[in-house]
Image (cartoon, rainbow, N blue to C red; front, side, top):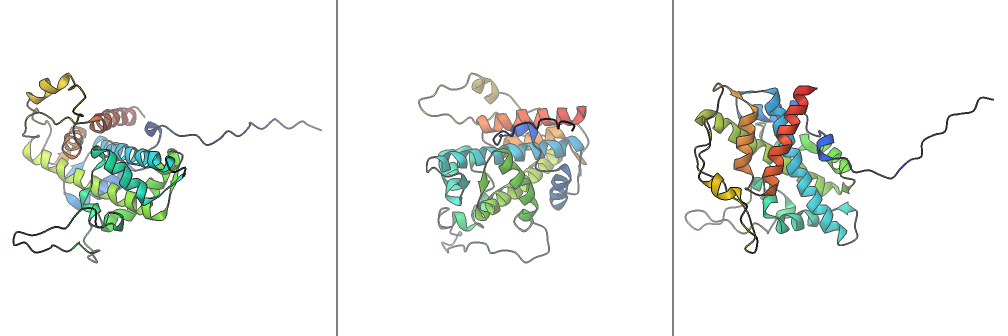
Length: 259
């Protein structure tokens, strides 16, 4: 009788590095951009936008995981999302979703118009016109893949919120990238860096605050990788999350070019 080869022992669940998973496909990114602008989106720009969105969602998920761990829970719930955002101002992205999701109901405060009349919360749109809220379901598969890569899971309500945040964030990124192309770059000075009052100011702060952003290169009909990076600096505050998102986006586009 021929001996059967020994089967390798199964190890426990592993947490995959964020750089090893691509939950948001470039084709999905381009579909979102088409809803916002007629401009062509280069391949490297699609990879960069997917990477930035992945970085933001990963940071939010990790913050929620820490909140859940404090209560000895493994499955994430909407309360963990609120805790993560309240503890880290850098995670306050995709504000438009907060007014739509029941998770944030009552937390964003009452909004008044110029005449002092309360502005009602927006309702779900039945329009066929694409929007970040209507199209949020397109991100569910990617969100679930990202949750698995981080060794965790979430209740359906939180998956819905992560879908919405990803959709709104990427939509805002598309709008800002198109604006960068139209205006020929970011017409502003310096950056904003978030630090605690007891922390020293990063050495590069003064240098960056005096530097003018260079004008973009390329035609006025194509959104390129650098346009996505510029849009990222608009969407994210000048803290660790923005720097990590920019670094990982550059690495992702380099890896995509080499493959």
